[in-house]
Length: 252
Image (tube, rainbow, N blue to C red; front, side, top):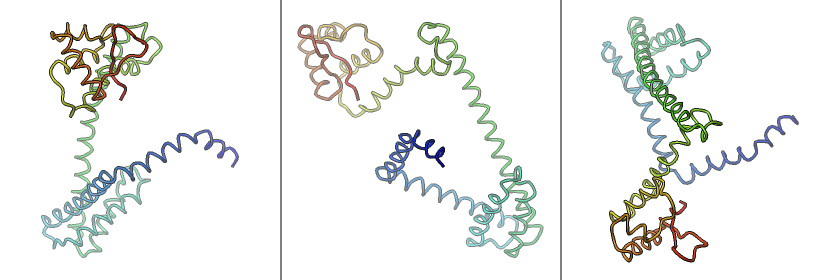
C-alpha cells in the first residue's frame, strides 16, 4: 500500500491537472458535452436503423422497438465475447440466437449475422486504407524532419527528427495561432503587413521609422498604426528604451 501511495504522490500534480481539466470541461463546455452525447445517441439510432433495414430487406416483419432491442443486445453479445479474436463464431451465433428469440427464422438470423460481419469487413478495409494514407504522410513528415536536421545541425543536433520538425514549425504555428485568436480584430493593410513581417522573424527592433519605410507611409501614420495596435493589445512597447522606442508582439 505504501508503494501505491508513493506512486500517486509522485504524480499528484498531474492527477490534479487531469481532474481540473475534466471539471473545467463539464463546467465550461456543456454545449460540447451535450453535442457529443447527442452524436453518440445518433450513433445508436443509426445502428438500430441498420438492423431495421436489414430485416426489412430480408422479408421479415421489421418493427422499430425490435430493431432497437436487437441493436442494443448485439452490442452486449459483442462486448461479452471480447476475449475471442474478432468474436469469430460467438458474435455470429449470438446474433442468430438473438433473432430466433425475436421470432425470426434461422435463415433470416444467419443472413443477418453474415451481413453484419460483411459490414465490419468493409469498415476494416476502409480503416486499413486510411492507415496506409496516414502512414505515407508520416513517412514524408519524417523525411522532411531528417532534411531539416541535416540542414541545421547545430540547432537540432540534440533533438529527435520529430522534435526537430516541431521546432522548425513553431514560428509557422505561432503565426497561425496569432491570426486565429485575432481574426475579428479590425486592421488596415499596413498593420496586417507589418504584423506578418514581425511574425515571420523581423530582424532587429521594430520602430516607427522602420514601419514607415517598410509600409511606405509617413512617420505620423506609422505612429498612429502602432498606437492602434497597442490599444488593441497586439503590440507592446519594449521596456528600458528612452530613445527610438521599439515594439514587439504582445504575449497572448
